[in-house]
Length: 225
Image (cartoon, rainbow, N blue to C red; front, side):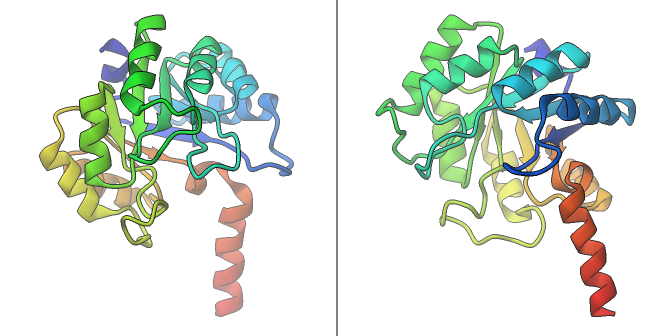
């Protein structure tokens, strides 16, 4: 798919702010996204319909959209309704929960992907996975790419300090669809390592676009010294 080809071998930057933060605003999101593109990002990952629409209008690289909603353990673009809304907002790639856990609307991942692809045939579908079995099941369900996004967050795998290198190796070896490495990639050398291990592209968020967390790293280092 042409959209995914534009991401091959590059850096996708996740531009998201948590609820209640000063930067939680669509205008701020698209400004951060434009800055990331200026720095060389080949794609942008954005949460929330308003932020997706604003970012799509502001950048000329593919936008990976998602919608975090609800209190269910599956809350990352959790239902077909959410996935369709993300596509309607303009995202060229729709990221959804790609785990094997039950979905809030009762649909299977395969049914969700099938309907999303039928209604938006030009949109790529990315499954955010937590384990190799997740990735293989998502691949079978018809997604265009799989990510390591939920590794360490679904209790199937321990939460590593950096990216889950073991899972990266497993997915690259076993999957036939592109593997996007995302999650706890905090340093440039980590991004380079996962690319050398065969990742299709790498997505970095906190280390680039979350000032509160980055600031806390420096504060902790100073206090610890």
